[in-house]
Image (tube, rainbow, N blue to C red; front, side):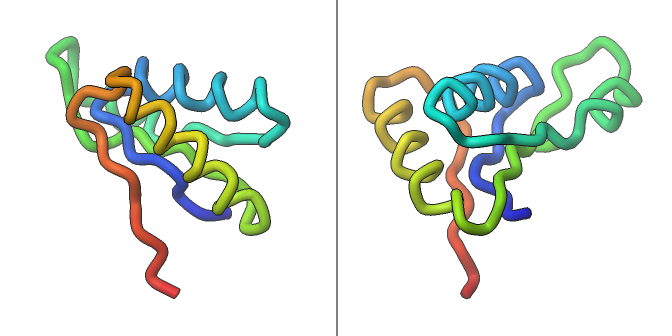
Length: 82
């Protein structure tokens, strides 16, 4: 699996995962338990949306459209190192 999206918090990670799932891309949201360990403050940079390798490109296209519409705050798309 590849990281398709790094969200600023777990809520945004699940929103993006829902968007991808609605478009036929299976996701896994990582970092849920790490964020909880930080307490009730808004911990950041622990939430990632993972997709299968073959779904990485279409997932990133959908994320780009999501960000272009101004829905994403300070979240970042992860660049593929390959």
